[in-house]
Amino acid sequence: MTPKMKRYSAFAIAREALRDHTGWERAWKKAQPKKRYDVVIVGAGGHGLATAYYLGKNFGITNVAIIEKGWLGGGNTGRNTTIIRSNYLQDPSAAIYEKARSLYETMSQDLNYNVMFSPRGVMMLAQTEHEVRGYQRTAHANALQGVTTEWISPARVKELVPIINLHGPRYPVLGALWQARAGSARHDAVAWGYARACSAMGMDIIQKCEVTGVMQENGRVTGVNTTKGDIACDKLGMVVAGHSSDLAAKAGFRLPIESVPLQALVSEPIKPCMDVVVMANTVHGYMSQSDKGEMVIGGGTDGHNGYTQRGSFHHVEETVRALVETFPMIGRLKMLRQWGGIVDVTGDRSPILSKTPVEGIFINAGWGTGGFKAIPGSGWGFAELMAKGHSPLTDEFGLNRFAEGRFIDESVAAGVAH
Ligand SMILES: Cc1cc2nc3c(=O)[nH]c(=O)nc-3n(C[C@H](O)[C@H](O)[C@H](O)COP(=O)(O)OP(=O)(O)OC[C@H]3O[C@@H](n4cnc5c(N)ncnc54)[C@H](O)[C@@H]3O)c2cc1C
Image (cartoon, rainbow, N blue to C red; front, side, top):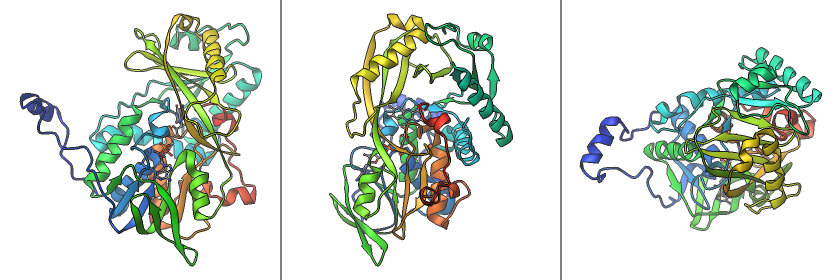
């Protein structure tokens, strides 16, 4: 099903300019909950909205509510540093992240909403012999998976990133894993684009509405209790990132997940100086330049569990120190703002896209520090799982893998990196 919405076009912009922008429709309708839906999705982040979108588009399921306790995109989706890549090690990961990356390529056209996807290339620096071996191994694995990446020399690194210092005080740059078609996108626009398309298909996006309980009968979900009243449903999708364990507990089961704060910061805007994304995992920091000119900087997670959307101050200091040795020129920049999100991390650093012990409840969680890049692939696969009971994209990411010891170990690709 293709959503029916008023199309944004150059003609529409010109027409609205002439009539003082009075003719734009709201991008998505404000909705109040109905008594019952076929599907309720909890969490209007990128993954929840993408799931709803592909439920409608690929399976014609549109009697759907997306329930959000804050505002849509206000969780990790609106707080991340927007790196998109698919250079993971294990086959199930490469499949879902590459599906996502390829959907990002056409997302603006598909949603008729400019998500500013910028395939500018992502570089992961190798600064120890161990990292060299790890990334060369990933490049070989990617070749077998059909994911285009390459191992590049320090000279090529310098050519692509003239501001880099190859001979830092602690670690030299020994080469890098390079994915030329990786990049970034505008995070809010991804959420807004999906929300607009979902609303156009007749779905209800209900903001400022918290799910406070899960109703069940004979081991099967029957609905949710919310701050705007009870809502009945046949199927429930839990897509709440940093609050996954909390919501699962309300439904009576536990998850192998830890929730930790992760933070990022941006500098004042400067002239264009770096047109790729660089990740330096040994010294622990990564950086890209936004379209406004700010240097967007991310670091690691706090070493303890927490639910503050802030993160510890010493991480800011360590991250900036790591980047100053990698890019000495940023030592002269002022930092503008810093913020945090709560990420849900699994033991094998891979997500959970799964049925649950309660019939009719499905969970999409555990994307940890790197789920923005996965949004369209995750939504595509999770919608198929919810509609048909399984999906080739999600089959390996079931909760049962933790009981069966069938881990999808991505600690090299995702433990530090994003
Ligand atoms: C600082 C930072 C940097 C990051 N950088 C990257 C990066 O560069 N690349 C990358 O790929 N990933 C990155 N990530 C990870 C990425 O942001 C997340 O994996 C992804 O956004 C998760 O999306 P989501 O839709 O699952 O969750 P969210 O966007 O967090 O959405 C979940 C929503 O559920 C809502 N909710 C929770 N509980 C309830 C309830 N009981 N009732 C109703 N609603 C509820 C929340 O309010 C929230 O809006 C980063 C994360 C952070 C914090």
